[in-house]
Image (cartoon, rainbow, N blue to C red; front, side, top):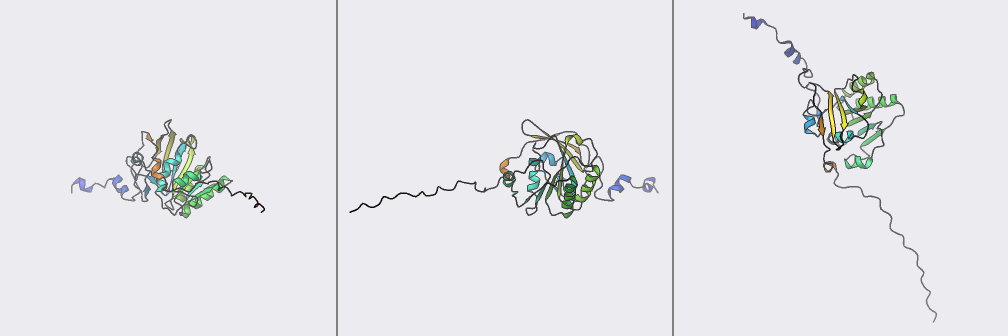
Length: 245
């Protein structure tokens, strides 16, 4: 019998057949669950599955709030099932309901939660992820322990909820169980530069600069009427008495 016929199969090939979620470090990992397109072709091309992974922890690291991080997500949020709500957990600012309504997320679909204690926020996030009835969870939390991140990532895997955590730039060197970590940096032109710090697959050695998508793509056809002043009430008038004969 030829020696080649007696050779055992390649270990790496055998491992890849064990489970569809296994992947080599030199290639994008395959996922059992779906992804949601980011709305930016150049960003989709750099993400495994060509989009934001669902049912997993995604970290977006920002120098400060309000640099366009929500604008980055609106295409993915807009693609989610309409009846399901989007949860904003501990946002740094009061949500601008007029802006969200213009993106077709009215008050009936937007949940704004601001627990007074951090542990209550963690509990709320875990319950939302386990329940799986929300389209997306956007959670602002800092500081947060790695054990909490692991617990939330585990809870996220029980559903297909889009789960984003916003954390500061300074934690980029810390370990995290997130399957995707992206560093966001604003540009003077209003664009947003993304550096992918972690993904399932080879390292991304180049930044991605994204321009803001046209706002008319997300505008509603009709708008609620603005408040208008009430019409002036008729004023009583003096009618002259008829002249005596």
